[in-house]
Image (cartoon, rainbow, N blue to C red; front, side):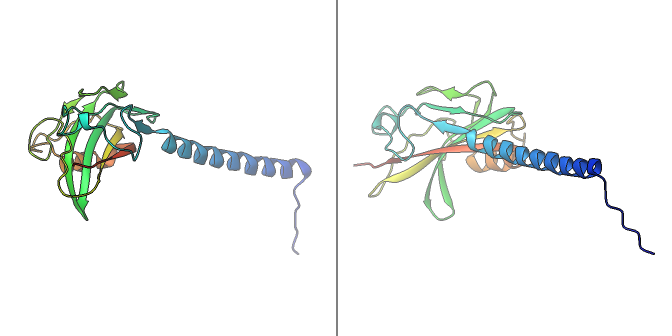
Amino acid sequence: MLVMRFPGAAERWMCVGCLVVLSLVACGAQQAATAESTTFAVSSSAFVDGGALPAQFTCDGSSMSPPISWTGAPAGTKSFVVLMDHQPGPGTYKWYWVLYDIDPTITSIAAGGSAGTVGTNEHDAQAYEPPCSKGPGPKTYTITVFALSTKGEMPADAGPVTRDVVLQAVTRSVLAKASISFTYTRS
């Protein structure tokens, strides 16, 4: 004989309550993850995202690095990395600025300034290299800030700390990244 037991009102409400709590927890976690991943942002007081870089930050000006700042770093950020690069063709990159092991309390770099440890630019100099575009038309450059869950130290045997060395070293510790781009056209 098959006996079916239907839960009483209290048991039904407990089941409904559990489903509501589980739904709210899942929804809250999804909203928190979405909010955290969309709040990290980088900006500059010298140009707008997608705008032209003023000449003073290029080889046609004073060649100093542009000011940048970032906000909304995720909880648990232990350091930042800043990279500035340009992609002249598919799969190729030129890099102009590599900063790593930036203290998590730093959220901006002044014009001509630096932070953390300076890596090498494309020409093996430990410095900001200003854009000095060749060829016709505007070129697009990108500054990316990475928030890391670890200190941004590089392996002792890494050799010159280039863009690729930094990217390989931080791959597993990136909590968030934010980018800003600009164009530069040389006359």
